[in-house]
Amino acid sequence: MTSQPTLAGDISAAVDRLATALETRVPCAAVRDLIGTDDLSAAYAVQQGLVERRLAAGARVVGRKIGATSQAVQDQLGVDQPDFGYLLDEMDVSHGVDGSPISMAGLLQPRVEAEVAFLLAADVAPASEYDITLELVRAAVEVALPALEIVDSRIAGWDITFTDTVADCASSALYVVGRDGRPLDELEPRDVVMSLTINDEERSSGTGAACLGDPLEALRWLAVQAHRFGDPLRAGHLILSGALGPFVPFAPGDRVTASISGFAPLTVSFQE
Image (cartoon, rainbow, N blue to C red; front, side, top):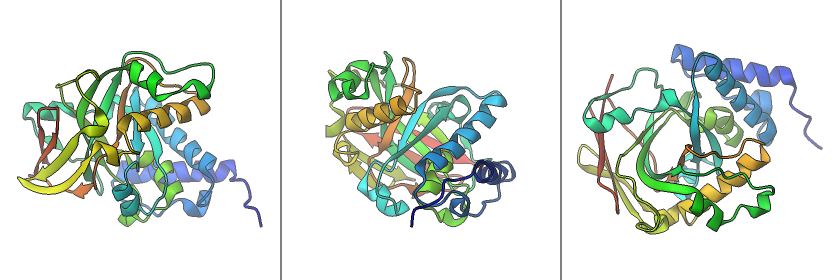
């Protein structure tokens, strides 16, 4: 039996459900009852609907994020492939690196993960997706940066399938990037080693190779997906390439430090 196409009304209902959860800070039921568990086009349509609502309210796209790039995170989420979402300017809480606590207002069930980010100096928009090679995306990178992503789920209990997390903007919430940018002739992303501590206790660890074998390979994968969606990566975009180890919960008052080799440690604290 073949699955039926998801109806526009079901996509709209899924957008409304997730948007309401975000606005009220009350987690909602999963949306797979509306869009199914294997209709990725419907899941990304829901994601696009949520992003468009935020853009209409004044937000601005500043980049993309890649999710579920490591086996550890795929195991945590119960998924078997990466996904992507948009970064908006209102998600940027990098002021936290200056010592100002980051507010947890608006978060529902947050987790934190450490990763390598890339700032692009050039578009990645060749004529064909087959021209998107590792060499092409490497050449497009201005600098690599240490990053923390605060992921969140609007779905109660993180009870998600792959289409649920895709629809829910790839379970994105906030992000922090350091100011210690390094050009790629000074740093090989796949070779970095990461340790994430909360209040000086190590809670997560990993390596660059845990991110699809190489964070630059994750960037190449994203560039191909963006090309297929007709919305290619652009110069000036910030790309969060994916967690290097498991994500972990945190609470108000916690101090989180990401130590990624080749970069200065990235430390932030959180408050209600």
